[in-house]
Length: 135
Image 1 (cartoon, rainbow, N blue to C red):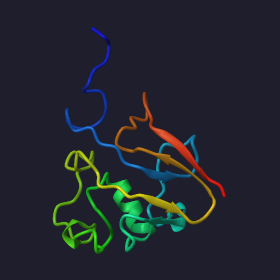
Image 2 (tube, one colour):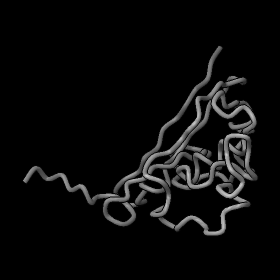
Image 3 (cartoon, rainbow, N blue to C red):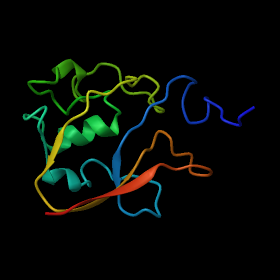
Image 4 (cartoon, rainbow, N blue to C red):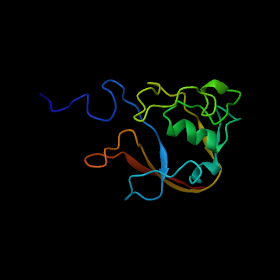
């Protein structure tokens, strides 16, 4: 045995998902709420120009299950946070296997710590990082 188990991680087997959320500090394991997250105020989507920072943050936080808050020209309202009838599963098992994503343009300098809450087990594994935007 190679010691690698394809079932490691959170959620139902075969449902590997990743999300991306801002957090205050690398020593923490909990993300900021979308309202608290300020990094997204300095980001534009080149692939969905109607999406604002909140829309982008919602899409990344939900692994693409929600494509925006209310819908945009590139995001049907029925796939948005306010339009979907069914909510995302606590472990994101019903999030899509592939995420449409965004090509982002950063309009402000600064930094952000981030965490993937789906694959963070709090005791034996975490997926964290940081981004720094410079001129």
